[in-house]
Length: 230
Image (tube, rainbow, N blue to C red; front, side, top):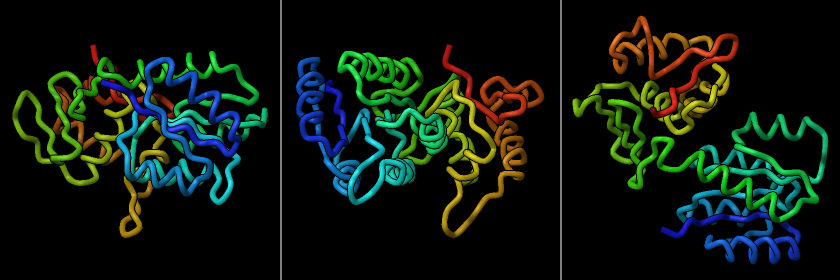
């Protein structure tokens, strides 16, 4: 199956050269030269990866990334012309999966893309139909169901959102603040101090022995992560 990459940058020459390189490697490439257009593509097309410049007209890359994370968990690589670590930190905190500093070699971009594709491919627990799997668990984001060993589990909406967030990034540690921001809505804000309570209840429903959790692991002084598939 052809993998689709959205490349977002206001540099026409960079878009053309990078698109040619990616297409030569078998990727389907969609381009956008501003943030608004990028979000239109995200809402319209099924994407496997987004390569996103931070400095964009009409809407910054940071704002685009925030909007993407509200509707999609597609992997995102940030492009930045700045070397300051603050941009990289902000990008990663907003949900970016990697970053590349301009100017860059197209071979570096290609290597980063391939690495991200491997990280978030089927071997990380994501099936072709979008079902997220970890051990005996299967979570269907579209059907809004979770099963363990084929038996349906009764999760609250908040528990479902937390589990989906962790399963989409197996092995990645999330802070309580990040989890809170991800599951909160404009109608209901979940304070980060309550994350431990929801995790405890979730473990009680999915773990074979909640006192010795294997699927949702505690990361000391940080937060929580889903175990990587065996």
